[in-house]
Image (cartoon, rainbow over all chains, first blue to last red):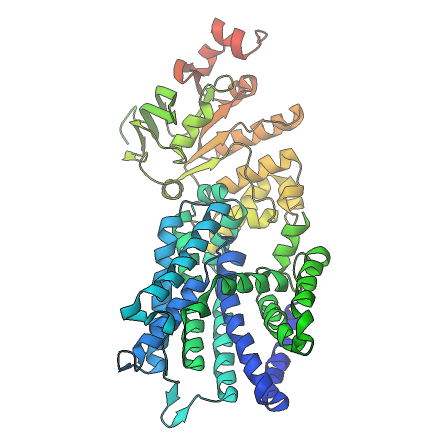
Length: 313
Length: 243
């Protein structure tokens, strides 16, 4: 298992690095879109897959990251903090948002938790729409700065592809390390049986809060990249559908599994692009796929070994 | 430690479930090295008392002291760190993790990997069945094995005080005997034990002292040899046929 992983991983990475020149501008752009969702998926997977907390408002942290960057790197306030400085700033902002959501929901479980997180996501979107003086409301924020290193500006689909790629590698590495850490073990115990975990000496409140905070930080990176890449952002970019899509791609790929998240994003975000030719049947094909998945592979395409065990029972 | 002072001292605690006054002023002492049993019928409040000690339930009045430190305002995870481990009612093992993983979770509060490995060897000595099934998913174990696992898991935290909640529940008589033999061995190896049991007959075989709970109050407290001679105890809890 470990050995096949070691052999395949460099091949896959090399393939992905060589992909953009082979597929051209348009598909590189699509791959970039997929990549942002991969990052969001990796982050939400920490909350849902590792810690077992159903979060339906994940888009809120994505929005916080995006607006955090856009406000401080655009003509809106005339502030132009460089992307590389803002990136950790956006992580901190989103993590703060995660803690803000985490604290009131610490004592909730299951469905109730899901409902409150759903509400939180909507609150952030509505705030963005209505806090006119700060966010410019529905007119959005325009002419957001692109990342630059000296004279080298990240402004083409190819350059963005590699930047997002680096972001994914970093996120996947961090998530994988977390999963195999002491924190990851506490999350497993908590996910399995919260009461039993507490009797083991695991501080449930602390590890729940950690899951929300860490999970949200990934969305902070995703949001900053999204804003810088689009050049303009609007409240409707951060609708409930984003949260649902990210959750769907985790479920399709295989909950708790990082390769699963990547595959899920490719299918969920990439497939509608492939099906553009038969656009009138696009949603039909897509819905059909989701239903077929739930019937034939309820654990997802690449389930984590443990999840497979859990669902079989 | 002061003479006569216990390892665990519960003073006049009151516990409510909503408006229901479940525990109406219970006091008890567990001294170092003892096996103290708490017997009583269904719904008398035995588990409630145990859950108050482990911090799962909050007391509304009274105090619980462990080694001279007040613990009844602490959360369950801090109480585990102080040296009290609970084998909860219904075992609450991690049913989708393996036996070994369950034991590792039991040692969550510890960082001394070498000692943890040694202790795991120790609990396998105590429960050889668990060694045979170390790689198995805990949910597929038999009831008796699950009880063994829950006990072993609690021991992995190296507790000074072990809280056992109905270890005999749902087990075949032969298995009950094995479990109680093991509890005695755990005690001999230096762990103090507070044992809640409906099966008073078995509890009396290994315990040094006992408390009888009736509807949220202590009805009797004595050494086991005296309790087993008591008329009421014999009638109500021992089936009246103890020789």
